[in-house]
Image (cartoon, rainbow, N blue to C red; front, side, top):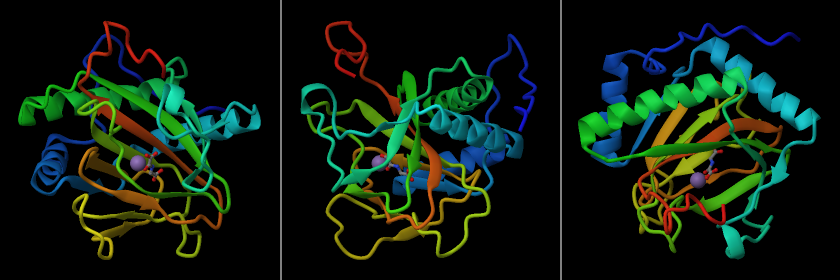
Amino acid sequence: MADMALDLPADTAPAPFFGDNRTAALIEDLAARGWAHAENALPEALTHALRLRLQTLDAEDALKPAAIGRGDSQVRAAAIRRTQIRWLEGKDPAERAFLDGCEALRREINRTLFAGLFEFEAHFARYPAGGHYARHLDAFADRPRDRVVSLVAWLNRDWQAGDGGELDLWPGPDDTGPPVATLAPRGGDLLLMMSETIPHAVRETVTPRLGLAGWFRINPGVGGVLDPAG
Ligand code: OGA
Ligand code: MN
């Protein structure tokens, strides 16, 4: 299938994924309870283009097993996390459009919450059938306040109950009761979470599951080197 053309305005500040009111409501939820969920957040053409891009990367064998932690602490622990990833580089138009939308969101979060987020990084993720990600927090214990806000966007076409891969989330790190929300990984839906305080998990998938996970960060790096081991 041919790549879908994305009309990208040149030389303008990146446009957010959706209108001002929706963006404001999303950021308000994030500030009030630590997470925010938006259905049909990505434009359909962008969801489609990103899905094609991820499928192409998969066909080219460009996805790699995900690790846990960074640098020396990386362990390929399939018991905790079984998924394949590739970091976004932004040369591909769909990747670029997604990163631009996230950049607009970053500015808006900073403007309203004085969060001081300075950059965004993201990877595609494909969970094979039987893939999962056990309950975890996204912020690394050895690099506090590095990842501040997490963003997840799903790319599954026609997700059905029974396909598995729902995302469970809990209101705080010490909450061990049932999850407060169980979200279907529907194509185009978006989730924001505070990286240090919202535990979440991906239930075992029945069919392969496509998406993106990204992080807004504040730490300018160690010794002036951005992400030395990453
Ligand atoms: C992650 C993560 C959730 C998802 O990559 O840290 O929690 O739905 N992903 O893919
Ligand atoms: Mn996570």
